[in-house]
Length: 137
Length: 79
Image (cartoon, rainbow over all chains, first blue to last red; front, side, top):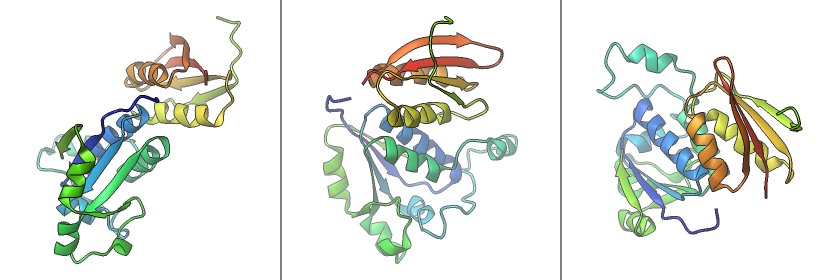
């Protein structure tokens, strides 16, 4: 995996467990394949990364119908925070909190889970995206 | 294929995608070059993910064998 891969940059906006999990699965897959991942935590996703909130119930998105909800809840997959930890172990994953959202929710880095590497502005995030894909979840 | 000496078997049956792959990656990182790892996985994703990762990471996929409800992936750590 020595060739330079373009990064995958994920704007993680949603704070529901299903979307957090989908983002974590993408991240761990990219990291395993040698693709660097930048994650930018905004709004509700940032709230989910508060140290005291990571393992609480973050509900499911509106896409989750009554029929699907129990199937999602019963699935034995790993928690999104655990997947992100694994992603960091196997690859290059940089998780940054959006400075604007930090300000909006009156948060300091000490309030966040250690999975979060730092706080940055949107321009710095876009700079790290270089010519790789940016996805919004 | 009774001639292959397996150094370590990882029983990841029942684990959800991408768990079996992540267990294999962890084991290979800790192992020695030349060692052979076997992953047992019932996850459908492993059928595509394990060969893709092994090729990308430049290890050797020795064998993939379907069993009853799961598959055996035999991988040699090549570097």
